[in-house]
Length: 224
Image (cartoon, rainbow, N blue to C red):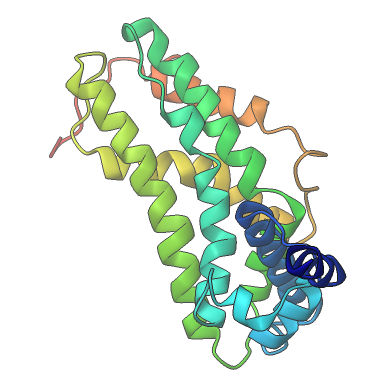
C-alpha cells in the first residue's frame, strides 16, 4: 500500500527528464533569451522558467549566467569533435579531411543563432566584457586550438609539414569563418544553411594546396 501511495505521489509531479535532455533545454532557453531579450534578461531564474525546470536543477549545469553562456558556445565547438576524431591515412587524405572539418565548423558557427550572438557582442551593453571573454575562450580560442591540434597530429604522422599549427589554424578560420560571419552580422549574407560554405572552403583549400595562384619567378620571401 505504501509503495502504491509513493508511486501516486511521484506520478503527480513533473516527470524527470534525462540529464542530457534537460541540459539541452537549458542551453536552448539561454540561447533564446540572449538573442531575443538580451544579456541582462538572461538570468538563472528566466532560463529555468523558459526551460521548464526548477532553478535548483539548472544549477546542476551552470553556477551562474556566465557559465550558461559558456555552455551555449561550447556546445557549438563540441560539434567539431566527430570530424576531428579522424586522422589521415596518407598525405592525400589531409585536404579532404580538412574540408570535412571546416564544413562542420561552418555548419555550426555560421547559423542564425551564432550570428545573432556575434551581432549582440558588437553592441554596447552592461557586462559586455564578461560575455566577450566567455565567447572568446569557449568559442574562438577553443575552436582554433582544436583545429591546430588536428593539424599538428597530421604533421606528426608525416602527412604534412607546418611550422606553426596555431597560426595556420587561425588563418584558415579567418578565411572560412570570420569574413562570412562579419558579412552575415551586417546583413550582407544569409546564414547557414541558406548560404553554402563549400565553394569558399574549396577556394581556401586550393590556396593552401598551392593551386590557387603562382607568381612567375617567385622565390622564398625574406624572413621565411
